[in-house]
Image (tube, rainbow, N blue to C red; front, side, top):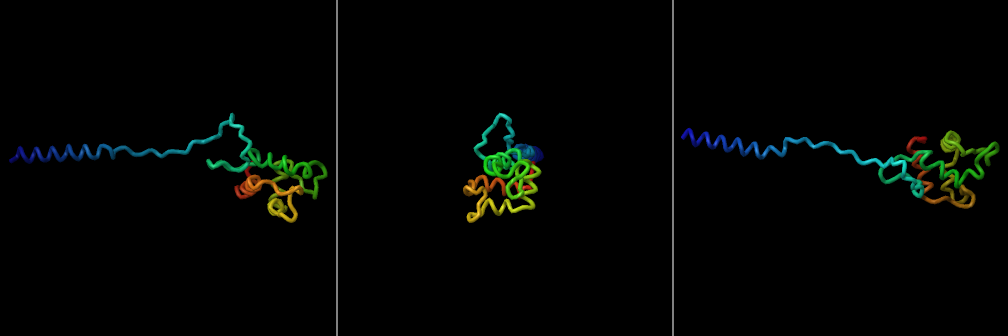
Length: 134
């Protein structure tokens, strides 16, 4: 009877050991891959990327402003007194001016030739909402 009890006890121990072996590993947290590849010069997407990169002045907004706004809003005498040709000027003009409302105003659009693409408008709005990252 002692041999049978010992055999049952040993079998139970081995069974428990075998079942719990897979549970001993603690899963390691994973981090999503980053795409800060300096060789990636895809300038077509001027809004924030789907991978969560924040919109910054350098990576998006400066290009949008240069191609849509700086022909009038730069230099010593910018149109309407609003300069958008540097990070500080663009930030101040967006925070303290009406840039965000004018880039969506179909009756009085900026740029005057017509509203820029939705993608560019969204990028500027995301930049403002994100805290005007440089």
